[in-house]
Structures are given as C-alpha cells and as structure tokens.
Length: 223
Ligand code: DX5
Ligand code: ZN
Image (tube, rainbow, N blue to C red; front, top):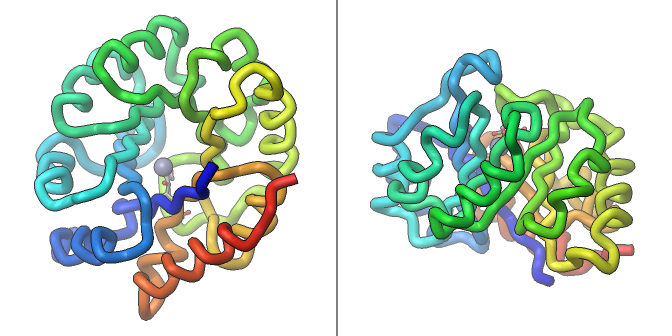
C-alpha cells in the first residue's frame, strides 16, 4: 500500500488559500486534509461549508475531511455533496457509531473514525471490518502546531494487531505533530497516511518539505 501525505489546510494562509491549494496540487501530496471544528467538540472553530466549497473548486486531489464536531450525522450528506472523498468522525462524538459509519458509506464516501489520544484502539473492535480508515490523533485535537504525543507509536502497533487478518487494507492515518523528524518511525510502527500542517506550511519551501516527507515514507519499511 502506498504511503499518503495529506497536508492540513488548517495551517494554510487563508488570505492566499488558492495559492496554497495550487501548491498542494503541484506537489507530491496525495490528499487535502480538511479540519472542521465546531467549538463544542474541540475548543476551537475552524471553518465550514463556504471554505470547503472554495477548496473543492481548486483542489485536484481528494478531500480527506476530519470532522471534529458533535452530532456529525446531521452534516454527513452535506459534506459528501461539498466534495469530500473521505469523512472521518470522532469515536468520542458518536453515540451510535455503527450507524454513523453506515451513513458515511451511504453518502458515497470512504469512512474513517478518529481516536483521541486517551481512547484505546480496541474500542473499534466491533466496527473495524466496516472501516476504510482509522485516524490516530497524536495531539489533542483543536489546534495545529502542537507537540507529538509519544504513546501514538504503541497505538499504531495495537491497531496493526487489531486489523491483522480482518481488515488489512485499512488506512492508518496519524494526525498532529507529524513532520520530517518522526515520519520514518511512524511508518516503521505501521502508519501509512500522514497529516501535516505546521511541518509543511511553516517551512520556507513547503513543496520541498512534502517531497522529503514522501521520499522518507517511500524508503522505510513497515514492520
Ligand atoms: C488538529 C488537526 C490537525 C492539525 C495538524 O486538531 O486535526 O489536522 O491541523 O496540525 P500540525 O501538523 O501542525 O500538528
Ligand atoms: Zn485533522
């Protein structure tokens, strides 16, 4: 399975959003990571449908939508219509997670579930076969630019063990504090999709940083 680089547009310059989207289009990145925050599930508000529509208009790569919102069921159809390819909801925000996963699939999108740093991966045991992606949060969600939480490596290994023989095509995505300094170790642990905001947009040459991340993931073998 090829490794995916998903720049988070949360760290883009919103005054020059089209420029930053074009940069991602031209780069070796695979997806656009779109962080939607409601100020309730997380202590921050990012953006909603008008911004997502603007991104969709210019983006040539799939939109990987990460919903950090309560009651996501209400909006899944709208996010699918707005151009999402993948929709990831938080385990901690879903009372009826099985139903939510089915709703995402019925909308025509790939289905993902995100886990906060305190949520163990084995809680997904009874839905793991239905999932296309699990997003392991390596920071507490809400803000870009936070420090990576080390326990993430253990969670990736636990998740690899959980999917063994059951859903080996599952994408294991890591989000928060990911960059050139830890991407190799994350691949080794078993992750294959990497969200990065600050590590890309705060560098002098984001295109080059994406290329470096991509080549590091390509030259590392998962164990
Ligand atoms: C955090 C978001 C992340 C964030 C990552 O709540 O889900 O996608 O943009 O940003 P960095 O890579 O700067 O930690
Ligand atoms: Zn995210």
